[in-house]
Structure formats: structure tokens, C-alpha cells
Image 1 (cartoon, one colour):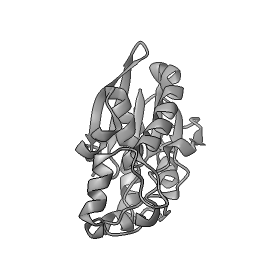
Image 2 (tube, one colour):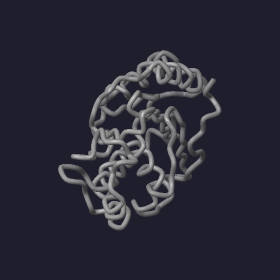
Image 3 (cartoon, helix red, strand yellow):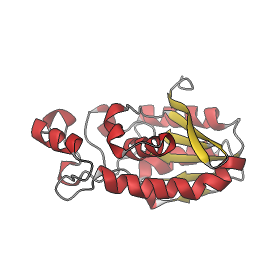
Length: 196
């Protein structure tokens, strides 16, 4: 099983800011969420933990690792958040409607200095493909961000990157991708039942 975990909350998340490659730490609530995620992952048969290189994911992965003794924590840059370019750190409500319209209309559109959903989708599909054999036998926990998790779900469902606009992925949520042979299928999405 690929167990997709979104990192715990940061102050930027709580403030409604677009958070791409900026690298704030977890806030106090995010640290509590990471501990709850650790408890949720304790019953799993974790082969390894893969994490985005950004600090908020690495902090969350470190908490999960306490419940998975012996499971290595590995950084994979393909799981980093979408690069929002010049939009990074801006309040979501202040992004012009025409910018959102361009983003939603074309998966190859990218914000100035940023990355397209299509480019993100390609790197995440590649990362998912590399986990299939191992995840068919044991659990691989991937600690990542909103956009890569949406791209992984799209990969599991066999749909295009545009489906990202139809999903909500909460902080500290868990989604699961299982396999029938080598064919992925979505087994759980945006689960928050572990949060205290």
C-alpha cells in the first residue's frame, strides 16, 4: 500500500496563504497532528518512509518514524510541492480570478516563475511507478503536500491532472493506494479520523 500523508499544519496554511516552495516549520497544531499521524501509522507494516525535502514534511516524517522502528526515512524531491513561483506566499483570496481561470483551464499553464500541473503530474507519476513493486508487499508511507497527493490520486484513478481542482486534501490527512497486481486503486482518501 502507498500511504499518502499530507504534512501537519503550518502558520501559513492556517493563514490561507499559497504555500509552495517556501519552507515554514509546523506550528503547534501541526506538531500535534504529526504525533497523531505517528499513532495512526503504528499498526502499519512500514517498509520505508519517503518524504518531500521541505521541512514541514521532514518534521512530519520524523514523527511517523518513531512508530516505525527500522524503517528508513528517504528524501525524494519528486514529492515536493508545486512551485507557485511569484504566487508563493500570497493569500489565496488575493490571487486574481483571471489567474485562477488560466490555471484551471489549462494544465500546462504555469504561474510566472512556477510550475504547471502537468509537470508536477509527470514527476509524481514517475515517483509512484517506482513504489509499485515494494508497495504491493509492504506499506510505503509518503509524506508530501496537497498538489503531489492530488497527482498521486489522479494516477491511481487513471485520470488527467485537471482532476486536481475537484479534490480537497486537508493538513495531516491520509489517503491510501492499493494494488491488484500492478494496477493501482484508491482505497481511502483524505482520512482525518486519527486526529485527536
